[in-house]
Image 1 (cartoon, rainbow, N blue to C red):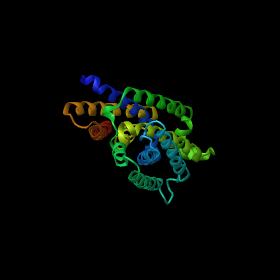
Image 2: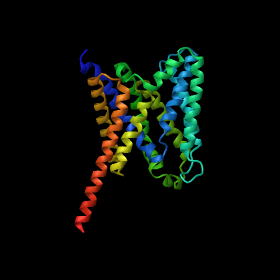
Image 3: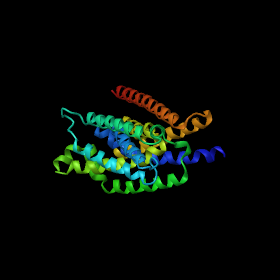
Image 4: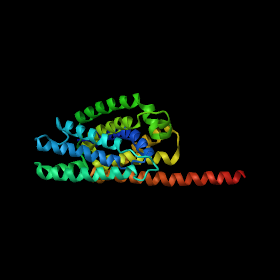
Amino acid sequence: MSAFELMLPPFVACMLLVAIHGYFGLHVIRRGVIFVDLAMAQIAALGSTVGLLFHREIFQGHSIWFSIAAVAVGAAVLALTRTRAEGRVPHEAIIGIVFVVASAVALLVADLAPKGHDAVKEILVGGLLWVTWPTIAKDALAYAGIGVFLFTLRRRFETISFRPDEAMRLGWNVRGYDFLFYLAFGVTVTFSVPIAGVLLVFSFLVVPALIAVMFTERAPVMMAIAWTSGMIACTAGLAFSYLWNVPTGPLVVCSFAATLIGAWLLSLALRRVQAAAVTAAR
């Protein structure tokens, strides 16, 4: 098998993940719920691990419905526990508790389930290098459906994420829309984790969005920067993984980190140039 044939499926899978998670990432950053990805991924994993007790392969076939049911419960919890920014209990603390509890229960269930410990490892690292075209097609179809849903409610979601006070003033059912947002996000993660694993999915979600907010406040430009930086990080990670013959997932995570550092240095340089231009104009 040639390098092109081996690396093309992981590359296409990465592009799909960048596209869908880049959008969610901007909302997550603006909402200040950075670790919601880890929490929802762990809840999805818990659901699939419970499926092992019923002799369902993790994240396969009917097992996916265990995960979707779990993320629906998780979405309800996150929506109902929404707090204001100035509240005494930050929402991020609640998300952290949800993550820890879901992780602990998943470990307990894995101890009871056949092949449970192997499933835990699979959840963490995924199987990006060995992703197949049928899996890519299935996930692309799922992401397309989620994309249509997000596009339909984009004005509500964007207002709640970027201008929450306006949404409150308009009298919207913010918690109801939060539930729909987190449910869509949880279903997305349910399809993403088997490919990339929890750690890499977190990178897809957070790093491109962080890079975008370094350079602009305009939503369309932010989205373009997030997608572009994600594509660069994935391409570099996959290329060096092949050249150096090292595990793909961890190296792509490191590639995201290197891209973030490079973007930060670039943003510092641009600010210095702008400051120098302002000083010279005076």
